[in-house]
Length: 421
Image (cartoon, rainbow, N blue to C red; front, side):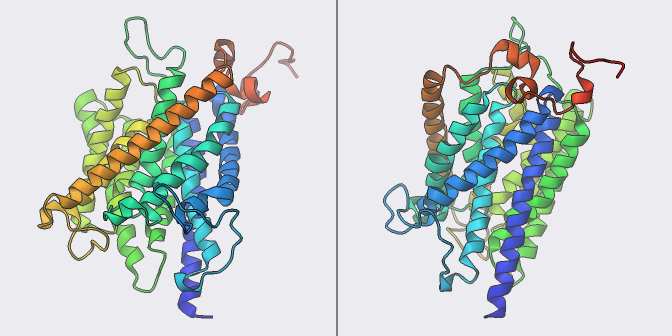
C-alpha cells in the first residue's frame, strides 16, 4: 500500500480524534459558564447528543453531504455508510467519514448551547436527530459536497459557516423560543449577570478547544505531502492569540477591568473567524482577522444582552458573529497564490466578486439554519407540551430534576440526609 496513502490516513485520523476531543472542551466551557446545579446535566447531554448525532450521520447525514445523484439540496447515496474504500481519495475513506462525523458533532454541540439551563432533555433528543439529518448536512452539501455554493466558489476551508454559523443560528432560534432564564432580566429590562460557577473550568475548556482546533483546521488539509498543514496551524494559532488580546484590551478600556470571560471568548472568536480563511490568507491577515473577531465578540455579546436574548455560553457571538466575520474575511484577504477555491479577495485585486459570494453564502446558510431550526422547535413546543422545564425544576437545577442526581452531590444537602454522617 502507498506510504503517502497511509500517512494521509493517519494524519486525518489524528485530526478526527482532536476534533472529537473538543467535546471535552465544550463540556468544561459550558459547565463552567453556567451554574453548578446544571453541571452534571451539561456533561451528560453533551456525550449523549454526540452519540445520537453519530448514528444519524451514519444513517443519512454523510449521504446527504457527499452522496451521488444530488439534487438542489442534498446528495442521495451512501446512506447507512458501509465503510467501503474509494481508491482515488488519497486516504482511507472510512477515516474521512469519521473526520466529517466529528465536524457534525461539533456543530450540534454549538447549537445546543443555546438551550442551556432551561430545556427539557427530551427536546435535546428530538432536535439532535432533526438538526443532524435536515440542517447541518444540507448546508455542508452546498459548500463542501459539491453543491450550488461550491459551484459559485464559496470559500470555507474548515467551517466558519458550515459548522459554526449553522450551530449558532440554531442556538439563536432556541434562545428566542425558550426565552430567558429565570432571574436574567429585571422588570425594567435591565440584565443581571448570572455568573458561571467555575472560571478555571471555562479556561481549561478554551485551552482544550484551542488544541482541538489544530485538528479542525490543519486536519482539513486531508494530506501531509506538502506540509501545508503547518501553515494552516500557524494561521490558526495567530488568530486565536490576537482574538484573546483584542478582547482583553477592549474589555479593559470599556469596563475598566480586564474581564476573563471576555478574554476567553475572544480566543474562541479568533479561532472561529480563522476557520474559513486559514488556508487562503497570509499570516499578517490571520492576526488582523483574529483581532477584529476579539473586538466583535465583546460588542456582539452586549448587543444581544440588551435585546433580552439570553445566551449563556455566548454561542451567538462566538460562533455566530465571528463565524460571519470569518467567512466574509476571505473576500478581503484571500491571496492569488492561496485561493485554491474561488477568487482572490478585494485587497488583492479580486474586486467585490468573492466578497459577494461569501456574503451570499452567509445569508442563505444562516437563514436556512435559523428558519428550519425555528420551525422544528416551534412544532416540538406544541407537540411536547413546551420546550422548557417547569419553573420549579429550573430553580432546582436540571441535574436533579432531569437525572435524579447532582454533578456535585457533596455540595447539596437534602432534608433526608444526615449532615453528620
